[in-house]
Length: 370
Image (cartoon, rainbow, N blue to C red; front, side, top):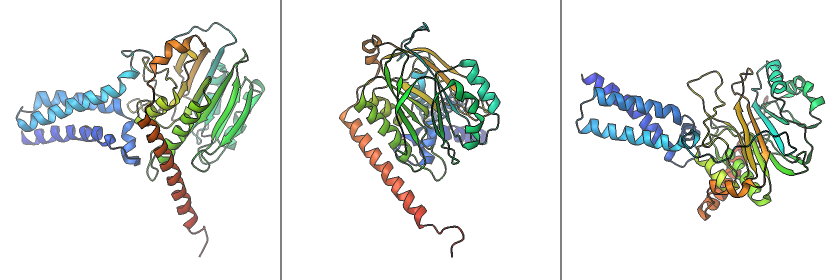
């Protein structure tokens, strides 16, 4: 039946096109957004491959589409297989020994319009982390999370009403705290020195750049992530980078971030651990991350329960272990000269995009103007 052939081929060509499109290295949001649903596209391609084998005649056109479908399926699986239990782990396991080298971090994009603060507070009390990083927080959320303050004497509170506010609560001492808009105006990040109970200082970076969305390409997001990567590489020493990166673990930018920074991803070899979208099981991918250097081993990595947000919180427990450095160092690829050049170009493009955006805003008539 001609109509059935047409339908199957059309349904196969869509995920083929969406697989090929992100190979175009462009910051356009409508391209970069297809970095996210690689698992969903892989499932779609697998279904279409079966449909083509069963329903299509293996004439030349049908063979071409089938080969393209299988090739795209293999490509998608190649991008995400590291985040399955089939791949070797990048970070070694450790046990919770109650030592003074332990640190736990809870990361949550709370959704600024969410009003179920009680559910989130209950989750924090249940898991009792050393650090709580909450993003998309305004003044209302700062007031609602005030009950955390007695247990977290070290705090960096930077609420904003633009969905990019950040609140950091720490049981462990913080020093050299900096809140800065690295690239985009009113898109802050937090940097600090975190002191473990053992006395060991850890470089801490908390980030929440903008996502790819309508009228918002990713130059600034990529620039911010790569600026952090370069700072990590320059500072060296024990480091944790965490937050809602608004990028998936398998994207080109995140992989470049890892190579430049030398940081490890505890998801590798363990699973996807998707944190977004909390309300749609069929459309989930990992946006909330914690990366760390080779001096840490992983005690626990867990996606927590629904707290009324479109993100699930994620909990990571680490143990500082300098002996792990040599064992885990080979797990990360060394950056090449081309990687450093690409990072410099991406950072320059991010600042240029921000200047252009600010110039456009300045040129707009003010409300109520003539």
